[in-house]
Every structure is written in C-alpha cells, then in structure tokens.
Image (tube, rainbow, N blue to C red; front, side, top):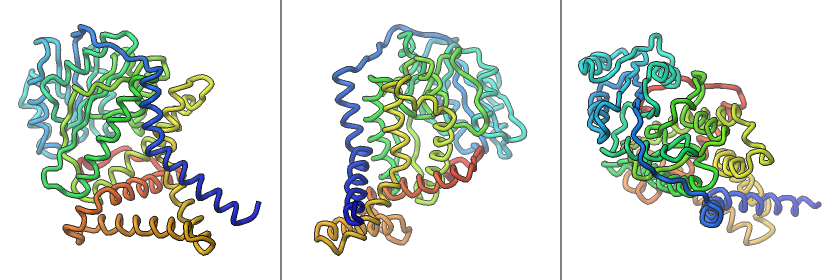
Length: 383
C-alpha cells in the first residue's frame, strides 16, 4: 500500500467514523427501537421515596432546592428529603438545619466528594426508591411521581428524567449546551426502548433501593450505577415527563472544566465496568456503550486523522484541499467563538464552538485518564 493510498484510507475512514458517531448512531438506534424495541410500561406505583441531595457550599440555592422537593406532588408521608453537607464552610448547614424535622440533615466531614455523600445518604435512607437530586436541581411538581411510575414495571431498575437547561442571558456557550442536551435526550429516548439508556441526567434519576451499591469516592454515580444496574439485567429507562431545570454555565472556561471532569470520571467508569463491553455476553447493551460513549469520547482521534491526512493529500487533489480548507475554517470559527472578546460574533459560532470545546475536553480528559489521574471533588458551578 502506497503512502497516498494509506492517507486516503485514514481520511475517509475518519470521516465515516465521525459521521457514524454523531449522525449514524442516533439514526441506527432510532430505527432499531422501532423495529425491535421493547417499550416498558407505566403502572400504578407509589412506594416510599428518599430524595438524596449532596451539597458543598450551596448557600445561594440550597433553600430553594429543598423547598422544591418538599412541594412535590406525591402522597403525603411517602417522601423524605435527605441533605448531606459535604464539608460546607458557608451557610449551607444553617439553612438546611432550619427545616428541622421536615428533612433529614447529615454532615460529611472532612469533605469527601459527591459520591461519598450519596453513599452516606443512601445508608440512612428509608425509601424503597432512591431519587438523586443536585443542590441546584429544580424539579417540575410531578417529577418524583413520574420517575417512580416507571418502577411499576418489574424489568425497570433505574429511571432518568429530562434535563432542561436554561440560558436566560443568551450566552453562546449556554446555547451550545442547550442544543447538546436536546440532542442527548433524543438519543436517550431511543436507547431507552432497546437495551436501556447509556448515561443519565444525574440530577434527575432514581434507582430501586435494593440495586444501590456503595461506590468508591472517585466513581461517577450517574454513570457507574446505571451501568451496574443494566449489567444485572434490569432496564435503565428515560422518562421525559420527569423534568429538571438547571441554569447552564455561561463561560467557556467553566463549561470546559466541567466537561473535562465529567468525561474523565466517565472514562474511569467505563474502565471499571469494562466487562459490559463484551458483545457476546451483553449484546445490544455493549453496542450502545461503544457507540454512544467510547466512540464519542474518542472522536478527537478521527478528527486529528482527518486533519493530518487531508493536509498531506491537499497537494494531490482539489477535493482534498477543499476538505482541508473546510476543517481549518470550522476550527477557526470555533476558536473565535470561544473568545470572550468576540462579542456578537460568538452568537454565529455557537455550534462549532461547542463542538470544538467538547472534543478538546475529551482529548484533555483522555490524557489525564492515560496518566491515571482522578478527580473526586470540585467547586459547584465553576466547572
């Protein structure tokens, strides 16, 4: 095989792989859901529910979050709210403590991270179903009831709801984040009818109490836990009427730090649950994990392959020169959109900017993963 042929193979295979990751897989999983999907059912189901909230220095939002959970439309006497203060040093403890017996308050000291806090809360929970909420999660009034209704089907072990990001100031990064989560929710809807969702909206999800297994502090609960449940043969399903509203991060730096952290923890989760990548044992579940997560998190590799190969081939054909030019233009536009000084121009570049941010964050997280780095704690809403 000549050098030119080799680079042509790299270019077209990289392009094909990227097309599959972002367009082909959502289409394939949607078609499979229609052809061989196994929809689960909603049935009357009102077990005792524990809502678990981990909080670190959340004085600005924790009061509104607790009130929001106490106002859920769910049978009286069948819902408890547990808040774990993870080494908070602000007024979080005082705000939560003021609710007295209306909620259960626990303190984790020294600070050990969200996962450890959820383990602590779960150990004290009385509910048959555990609902996980973030400290800034604002639920629709029927969200808990909608989540729980899916457990009327005995095949269902884990339920995730619909995350709706709010971008009230119209920031470009916020717009990109909104578009991305809409895209993810569409994919989850199809996956839900096959082997189950791969990854969930961590601030609005629930699990059967008997399926909750304590996790290491460095593990990502909204990835490890649903994968563990799926590995046991239960379904992980998406319930779009269970809504969660959160404000998106505004700046590129905060969004980038958050994405690096989330992807790094997800890569470690994939490593911990690597047995699920065996297609001979887990079939469709394995296919979905590889397509939705493994290939998505490593999409920067074919992106680099396309750029290098088209640069090498540009002098041999106008087609390859055009492909190179389109890539360089897209990356240039994306970089401009990530600059704070770009002003109104950012609005025109929101989608290439967010696409670039996601994939650079994936490359950064992968580099940290290869170096065996882990992240357990972080600052809320700063990434």
